[in-house]
Image: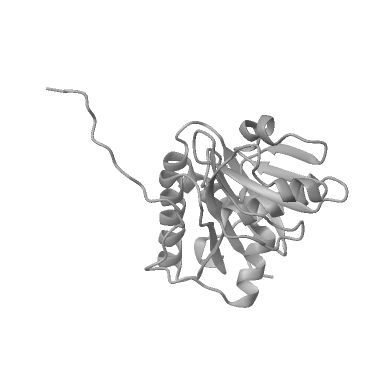
Amino acid sequence: MPNILLIETSTALCSVALAMDGRIAASRESDRSRAHAAMTAPFVKEVLDGQGLAASDLDAVCVSAGPGSYTGLRVGVSTAKGICFAAGIPLLSTGTLDVLVHQAAAEGLLPEGCRYVIPMIDARRMEVYTAVFTPAGERLTEVEPRIIDADSFRSEREAGPVLFIGDAADKCSAVLAGPEARFVQASPRASAMLVPAMREFEAGRFRDTAYFEPFYLKQFVATVSQKKLF
């Protein structure tokens, strides 16, 4: 079984894990504000040192590709690329929404008879990055930014039990609440990348380390401060 380093930095949670022998052997997490740039590399060193491994002992690095925080995604992808270049190992990636779906299954969060899992990444105000999945992880709709209102996901909510999971679940619960809807406020964790990372590795779906870019979904726009500093 391959040794795969897992990096998830797409939201407020900075998370790193190490997969060995088909299981999670070590993990580190921090939800401290602005922790990504400061903690991602140290977390990588900690999980490798804890198992007596060097980067060259890895078979691949898998990074969560987004959508999510622009800065967080840049930190995660840059760290993953640096390790892959230095150690001469392949790069893998998996979507952030896919990670949340597998996290729901791994942590026993699926309601009985669950028909759909709808992960939601906060995009501010009442907008989210989302898509509709089956409980088994099959994506049924395109990943998109979506403004949530009372009509959102009406057909899915009327079809039976549905799980909304992500760091935007709480803010959407009042609008989408119903007898068949369950809401779990959660950030994606690196440990939940185990199954999709293994699938990508076994299928040989390696990314071009030099040219791989995160899936931002929306373009980052830098603004100019209106404050007069001088």
